[in-house]
Image: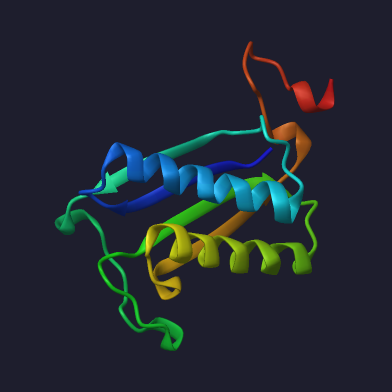
Length: 127
């Protein structure tokens, strides 16, 4: 049940953003076994004055093409699955959208089944 928030500098077309979203989702399907219809994402674009990063933190050179990808998902994936997901997303975004792998910043935040409501004020995952 991942929920994905994507943050990047403004200026991308709707078609480009849709491709970015689908590219990330395809990696999720292949690497962490997310069902194809489990597709919940938001994309937010920022002006230069609203988007900050260190250009060399941990010896990774970043540019203004940086994309933050924040996953909220159940704590059921192994370390190996997570690492495969990171590699897959960075590689796909690079090959399909031309963004440098160094500019793909991914973070995962885990939670439990009871932390999700998919509508109607219910906790469907634990009912």
